[in-house]
Every structure is written in structure tokens, then in C-alpha cells.
Length: 189
Ligand SMILES: [Fe+2]
Image (tube, rainbow, N blue to C red; front, side, top):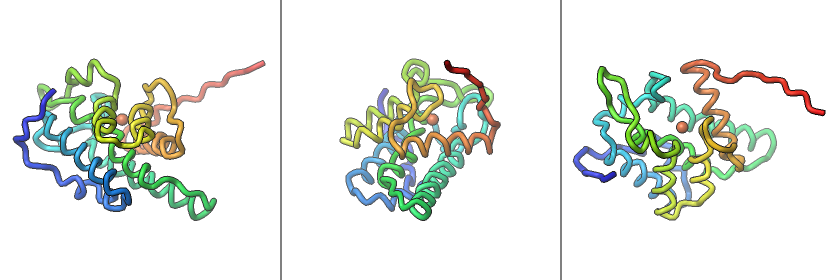
């Protein structure tokens, strides 16, 4: 997959103003660069055409923005009520990046429906973004979130930041689509 650099750059901070709060300047720069590189490598001309998934025909951008907002609200509640500090740099970077791979995992298809690209068909969700992050020296805990945040991932996220994002992502899907969780009762000896 190659980048053609023919599209107008995205205003990444305009889309996700919380990036401004990332203290680590290298991480902040990397988050912006990764989004921009994925945008340039994608087939999308309008970011608003990207949907949450082929199944969920709802625009991706407000979903991603809501997930960032909710994740920081959870971090604020932990700090206020439990005096518990979350790594906010990692939380913001992970929240902004965890679904950025969708830009290259999907492309516009016929009749306004999006379809999977070769990356989307052949590689795990989040892989391409994690690859760019590793190449740019982003902390592995952030790539870990990208690779574990989806319900189809091989394991749950290990970090508190990843667990917050896992659950707020699911909560937002309940709001925009439906509750996909089922209760199963297991009896152990
Ligand atoms: Fe995702």
C-alpha cells in the first residue's frame, strides 16, 4: 500500500482537539502523523463517508469522537472519586488511534456502501495503525490497545487505559446501534 499525497491534509487536531493535551511532544506529533498518513493512503475523499463498520452504517467520526470524550470522562471520575491516575497521554493517543486503521481497512464501494480493502480482508483490525505506531517509536502499550480493542481480538487489553477504551467503545455502540452483549451463565465446579 502506498501513499499518493494528493488529498488535502486532514485537520487532525480539529477533529480530535484532545490531542493538544498530550504532554509528550513526540507522541503528539506521532498521533497526528499517523492519522494523516492513513488518510493519505486511504481511498476516502470525505472523512464523513467512513462508517463505523460494514454492519453499522453510522458515521465513524462522531463515534470515534464520542469514545475519546467518554474515555476522558471516565479518567476524570477515577481521579475525582478514587484519587486514581490514568496515563492520560496513553489514553488520548490510544483513543484517537485505536480505530484509525479503518481508513485503510475500508474503501468506498458500489451504491454508497463501503467494502473491505486487502488490508481489511487479510490483516487483523488495528494492525496497520499499530505498524505505523511501532515504526514511529510510539510506546508498545498504545499499539497493544489498537490490537486488543476489538471484540474480535485474541485477548482483552491488559492496561487500565485499554480497558476503559474497550468498555466505552461498547457503550457508544449501544447508543448508535444496539447492545451486542449477551449474558451467559457458566457453572464452575
Ligand atoms: Fe475498532
